[in-house]
Length: 414
Ligand code: UDX
Image (cartoon, rainbow, N blue to C red):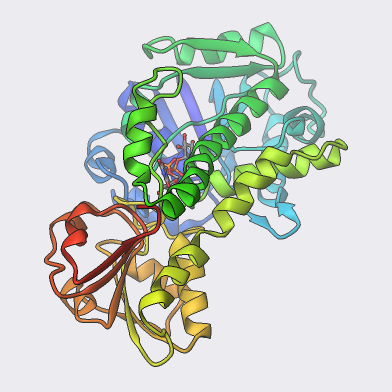
């Protein structure tokens, strides 16, 4: 099929490359000229396993001009939805839709616009469709509308795209859904067709549930720590029950990244706007927000951060990515700087991105981090499982077994 993808961020780029690999004719559009130029040269602006190779292999048209959506049967909206203290910022997506409406105005044929960006329930009905209808064209008659959320996990996004656990198609009407269903028919995954608002809620509820699992096991960890019990063993024992399952029960510093914290805040804000106080979800966020302090309190049992050299192993929000958005390392560094510590840090991929946030700390090799007065393990990179920690003071936020050989070792929940 002929597809356009608007927004060459994480989701847009991965989706474009994967749809192109599946023999669709794909045009990737972004107003950021530099980004489009880089992708056009076959270079991925983000780190994602397998992306560079695929970018060199698949035919992908890139453009900064919305006119290039003109002959597409399906147009995906993959524009980012950043957030600030007041909540989600819809301006970028609204601007993209305004531009698209300008194109729809002149189109004579039917196409389907699919929202892939994560938005609060009701946004496609209440915001997306009215903007598109400014074209003078009517949803359901002149063009179709769907909402199909993404469930891509960073570091394995290509695999997640190619082998999805489910495909969710929220549809304005049957005709819109049928077109998008055709696009996904070769994926070997359960497909669910539903309303636009339900699809939006499925995405938010899924991420809120994953976040809840993590904060749940971390709360259990707070109890285990006081009991002198290893939370990882408790989680292992729980995970044999297939109603519970072993995944997302890895206790530690908590969740970060571009999705879980933001999506959780989005669902909480929406619930409150509807007059409902979501106690569980508020608790999930509260437990997560306290994680950095838990680790620092353990550190302070063994060393005074003031005037000490504290080494951080890991800065990315999780292993195998260079992404530092909402990384737990941010709160830890902020607190340590306030306490007057000298900080050195090492991360195999994310040091450059982190240095844009904190230019004042030192970015060094693993060995130099190991030479610090005390070491904090912040991200569970595989390579940290094989370091020599003998003789060190290590406070572990991520369950690195080998670090238990340290002279002084303490884990956040074990
Ligand atoms: C997530 C969802 O998994 C994905 O389906 C969605 O579409 C986007 O958001 P991602 O943000 O890439 O993906 O990361 P994920 O693997 O879910 O991890 C999120 C955070 O939770 C990381 O900081 C990770 O370290 C933490 N985590 C994860 C735990 O602390 N414990 C766990 O058991 C699992």
